[in-house]
Structure formats: C-alpha cells, structure tokens
Length: 117
Image (cartoon, rainbow, N blue to C red; front, top):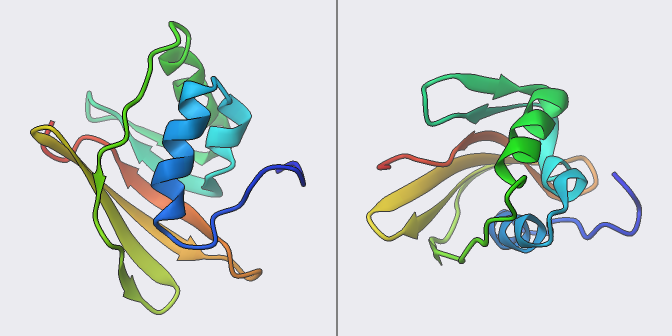
C-alpha cells in the first residue's frame, strides 16, 4: 500500500474509506482496505479470495463509474483484534470482519456486501 494512502485507525473507518475510494475510482485504494488473503462475497454466491481476485471484482464494478452513497454505519462489535462492522443501506446491509494489524490499523478479512440484498 502506498505510504500516502490513509489507513484505518478504527474498524468504522473502513466503510467511510470504501465509499470515498470507490467514488474516486481508486481501485488500488479499495484493495488496500483488505488483508492480502481476504475473502469478498459476490452477489451470485461466488467468492473472491486474495488481493488479485478482489482487484478484478472492483475493476469490473467501477468500470461504469457508479456513485456510492454512505449508508448508516453501525458501531463495530469488538472482540480482541477482531471487529464486526456493518452498514445499513435501504433494505440491505453489509457485514464485514476487520482485524487489527500489528501497526494498530485495521483491514477487512471477510466482506459480505449484500447480507439482505
């Protein structure tokens, strides 16, 4: 991850950073929100595992430059170095597991962007 890229100091930062980076078309910035071997659930039931597969998904997703609107972010549920993050969007919701990194920052390990979608 480039040194000039902001890093999440709380698990809740990740959701805000996702919206900002997606709206800017920053694919590298989106991938940087995940651990190198993270798993991203896809709407069709498949999984993207690891940085390269996640990069491919976001490259396709952002091709038409959609605009993302922040949802209602819930307070993260913590247990040690793990945190459950979630955001409500209309009738849908997201759920993610973030992990505190050795430097104290947070990255997503698991991402389910369409829990109720």
